[in-house]
Every structure is written in structure tokens, then in C-alpha cells.
Length: 373
Image (cartoon, rainbow, N blue to C red; front, side):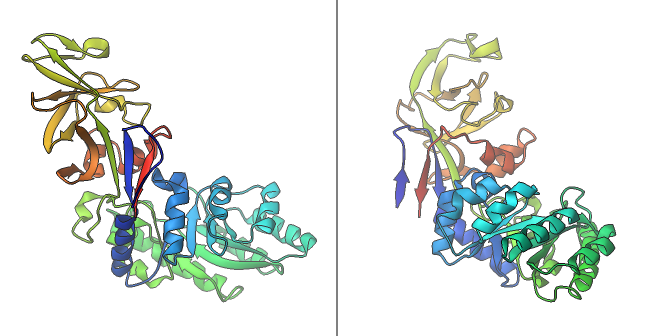
């Protein structure tokens, strides 16, 4: 099934079946342990509601987002799912936790646990929560050096249920030594927390961890975003598991023009025709998510032929050198995998010093998503 929600012929084709295939391959690599799909940032640009609904219908019941607003957006689709919220909440958000009992905040601040306990007691409800332990990420999480204080607070909790204890890898796709060091710290922390709360889920690996730190498959879950969508955090790991890009950005030749040698193309005159030839105008620009960094540095596929982008990419358009047999209306594959070959998102990103996360997250709302699956 292909569902298109716009008349615009520049669109991102999202293949949900490929996404689920990637998920299955990652589960196999993770020693059969289930994976929590991370669907923050509009599912890395792929469409959070659609991705959530598809995986929910496949029987997946645990998901993760960054912010409370993202959790609320998807909450009506699957009312029996657990939705982990990574970003720290503030006390006024606790009312939403009482209203939406499928939300599980991942706490990074010990004082927030105390506040949750007070509010749960006043509401006469038992609220669920998880804890992130900072074992070396240097971002969110209760630092492992503060474990003594954490255990003290957990020992006084009566109205809360601890569901998850997690940590996060900063460099799992290339630094095994530091990642294994983190596991040692995490295991010690988990052992001590279990003396207060004996039953909870543990998870550590992100996409890089599943691909490169098999030792972390001993935990209850892994959390993957990037690789579920079909992108490698490090192309050196591509032999670990087959992953197919689930997004393809497509447009078309809207206008075909003939230029003489020496004539300039687009703003700032950054490109001059090296010989007489044709230029195709493609209605996709930086307002759609293709940055000016790619100006004069990228190629697109038209009828299976590589065609270089020339001149500065503008808000709404890019210009492409095309042979004479390319015509108005011909499909243009900007990145992703197509029937006549492909340009992997990872390579598209690396060509200008970006990472694949940036590419897919940057595809703007004015680019309609067309779903297969």
C-alpha cells in the first residue's frame, strides 16, 4: 500500500515494511532480546504517529520519545503501550503522568523522584518511573557517583513503581573499550538498586551498541532509533547486520533549460557551465531539508543516471546537469534506495560532514510522506 497525502510531487517515501524488516534483523543480532523503537523527533523525520501505529499493530508495546509533547501526540493511537520519556520533566508535568498512565518518565534528577512521591501520595495513585544512570555519557542521568543518595531516596519511596533502569552509550559504534567500562559501572549500580527495588527492566544499547557491543545483549531490552530506520551509525559496521534505508526522498524535473558554455547557474554564481548543455530544475531546496552545504557537491539519480547538482541550492529548488534524453516530469531520486539504484542516506550525509540523523530529521513538514506497508 502506498498512501500519499499531498499533490506535491516532491515527497519522502517511507517504507514501513523495510523498517520492520530492519527491526527483526536487529532483534536477531541482539541475541533475540526485544528492542524499544525510539520514535522521538517525529520518528527521526519518518512520521511518529505512522511508525508508532505500524509497530503497535505488529505487537510492539514499548516505545521511547524525547519529550512529553511527543508522548501525548502518539498516546491516542495505542492505549496499551508503554511510552518512555527521556527528557527531564518538571513538577507540573506530573499531572500528565497521573492522567496518562502509559507514560514512564526516565528520571535524571533525584529530587524529581521525591517530588513524584509527594504528588503520588496526594493523588492517591501509584506512578511509574524509570532512572537513567550517567556512566559516561555526560548528558542526562543521575551520575553514578551519586548512587548513595539515590539509594537513600529510593528506600523511602512507597507510592512509586520503578520500571526501568538504563544508561546510554556515547561512542558504542567505534569505542568498545569505553563502552565495556560503562557496562561494569552499570552492573554495579543495578545490583545495588535491586536491594531496594528487586524487579525492573534494564537496557543499555542504542543502535551502535546492538551492532558493536554484543555484551550488552544480556539486558532486557535495547533502544534503537537510527538503525530501525535503516541507517548505520558507522558504515564500518555494515557487515554486522543487513539494514535497508526506509526513506527515499524523491522529486522530479520541473523545468528543462539549455545553457551555453560559460553561463552561470543560481545565486552567487558559484557554478559556470563547462560546456553547452541542459539543466533540470528540481523543486526541492533548503526549505525542504537539503542544505546549501550540498551545493555543487551532490549527485541525484534520474533514470538510473548520476546527475550532478550545480550552483547554489535555493529555498525551493536545486539545479541538475542532465543529458538531452532526460525530460520534464522524469523522477529524481535525491537519496535513499530506488528501483534503479540508490544513494544511501549515510553517504549523502558524510559527503558534507553531516550524520544520517541530521539528514532525515531535517526533511521539513512541507515535504509530504508517502507510506508503504
